[in-house]
Length: 74
Image (tube, rainbow, N blue to C red):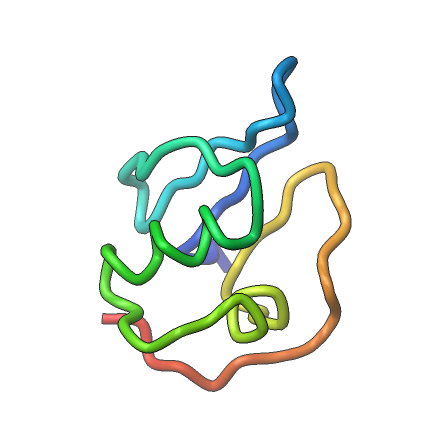
């Protein structure tokens, strides 16, 4: 299953490229950055706890907070 959100390996500056449904959203340097990208993409009302615990995000090459989310991605 292809997950709708992909957070790539950290790059040389520590940022991680973030894509949503195959569209590049930008480079996140924090969980807050990632949250803002996803809020603009369609997940309004989410905060860092929601994003950190969401299983709809594929974290490539890095840890995340375990958990789940039951959000419907539009």
